[in-house]
Length: 159
Image (tube, rainbow, N blue to C red):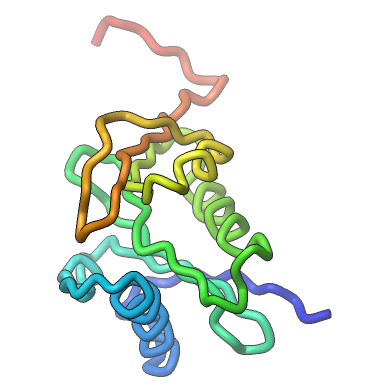
């Protein structure tokens, strides 16, 4: 059985073939399959702190996501995409768990889940934090996974 490998890098550090494959998968899922002609290349991938995570098996790209640092210090998970042959195999779940492990428990993480995936993201500690909205014709819900104060840190109200 082939081994699933998880990777992380800033887009600027990727080799051209990996960069191409990730963008190809994102376009295939979001633009072609979901029939959403929208600006997939939105400029956020060029932000200095942007990070891409992806999963491969036997050299084949199976899934990808990106992490973005928001101005409020949260990290935004987005562009979670899984190749059709890899769906229902737990690959996206492994990728989300990998991302959360890399970020640590103290980081607050946000995302906009497609509404049918709300319960799936709840398994990772995310909860709905706003009203459902429609983006590109697809219902979404905003979700948040609060950061936790490490047990050895004391929080006080005084500065």
